[in-house]
Length: 132
Image (cartoon, rainbow, N blue to C red):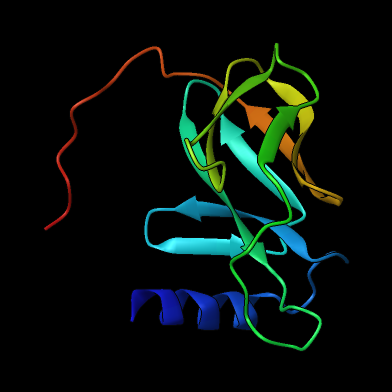
């Protein structure tokens, strides 16, 4: 059931995606972004990226990839990426402010997303009274 919901959401969220059958998605707590143009990442914070796939040639949903997935970043000084065992997701962690690209490739399919790493870890915390 969850897989069907995910595939439905993937189809709905694909409107306006970049061309090509392989798409990088960004997962935040409770949200899934597909067809994104830019990932904003805070230095020192890790987020999970994943893949969605277009339908096969007959228009049927598919989960089959043409090969192993490789993930790369264009500037390893600004972010690191660690793929999962199956390669379908990867954790990217910002390490220095700046811009870079993250790319996922499977066989002849590829998708690239721009990433901006901003700020860093806070230098202090403050206790405040919250409104009731």
